[in-house]
Image (tube, rainbow, N blue to C red):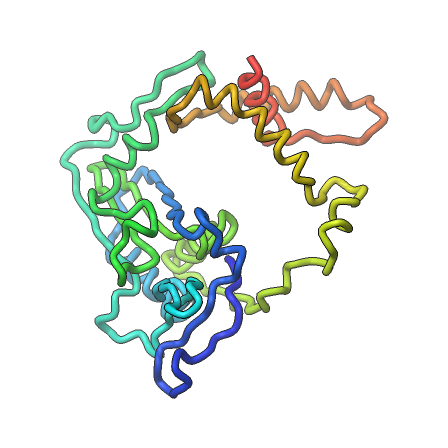
Length: 296
């Protein structure tokens, strides 16, 4: 999860809400306004109470930052977490909702794939899934949320043979790795497992060496800061596509694991005698397929 700095009292008095300013990198626009949605399709009927109790335990005992609110400081304009001194019993740690559909998941025909061969399938657009599996009033952007909106929103859609769990969380609170940690910890508590303590690190712990921009651009390794010319050169390559495709359509493309495994095995055999020791992964194969398709 993203680290946010040191806690301070909002007005210096005991018992008041604490304030944690968001780091500068988490406050950039449009990053600060993005809310990330995740959908989990589980082929069984899940118990709302078990899930909800485990999530409340996760926040109260392990990750209280998830129960806070993000406000903008009046003097500085800097976004900051506001943490109550204590979470009262009636405090809204997260927003929970659920609906029941009187059909199976297949009968609902929400996930209707269009096959492209035996191992590749297209699924409906993300917008269609959002409409089917989230409340109509859910904010998809921080600016759409009311002032006291909880950070974490959860919505369950129950079918007769499945449950879809939708979660909604600001990207500035957790990136992909942090989001995964939250979900994994939640699942562990549902299963009755105890959680190890979460690390509390300083805001600058992961910043790396203190180098100037010039020093970082002169690196000889694989990772370095790009120059402005390099950035603009890359952006220019997107202009023809933006002219042809002015409206983005978000869709789901599914590759069967068996296809990726076979391609990876074939390619690893072809490069086995190469002087450089390289072992391809399924991710390498997937990226290669997408790059080849996008260049046609």
